Image (cartoon, rainbow, N blue to C red; front, side):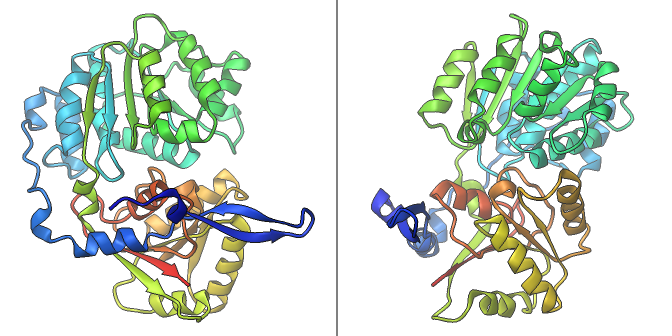
Length: 393
């Protein structure tokens, strides 16, 4: 089904100072959900059959044990197709949606290459602090017992610990573009020492205006370098970046429908009832065990957190007004099920990987179709089933 721009955009809000309407984009997924619901299950493609096994990649023995310890039995499509090329040193462009296992798709071969030559250094850039922290955490799991070291370089926290980590010449540096540039300006990191580079969620980095920071970092890399370039979508600006920086890359595209098939989508009509009441009624139902609720603004989420708290729900919230420590504590509380409801703005819609999210609820409509896809992709991950609900007036 094709949705034109007139359907995607809505005009809401009156600016009293300018005496004019303020254009606020929003995407109502009703037609998209209806299309997914009506599509016969027989039209879904069959299960992917991997051509490789993790054992067949000839990986380091401890890395194989760590992969098994993470519960990874068979490579996902992006892992099956990307790992062989990255092991051989080819540049790779991976187009894969959320929940497809792409973090392990670039970490596994790069860890293996570092184990073959401990002088190699890898730089990984992510658009958000949460995604960078999550990537480094997965890296630590996969390198357990291997004497492979990493430093997380993100904003929202002091530089001191990061500087000390970089002084030890870690094998991996994982960070956001802004903090990496700040460290480089202070001569605490030298990009020319990194022979392998991963740009993760490139479309999101471009959306957030990081093109100049990305260019600055890449311009200082050594001429002989290996690129892994991952993105959920491939618009023109992303293609331009790929053509500019990558050399004869292998392009791998994983169809989004393979992960979306695990998510039951539905629209919840409020029918004039206050949305907080509708949300309350949903959260008290059986099966709503770990729920991620998306809102549009940080102020609206804070108000929603207070309202839900006063109703007896254990909730946490992450948004731009929270410090990095507060955001990490909220995520950990949600991961460990100390709270069953996490409220988030779209800062959490890209790359956030929390095991066992049963439901995603769009309390406020997302801005675009892509934002909707990324939001609901927080559930139904890696062969698990999930439910995505959108509240619509």
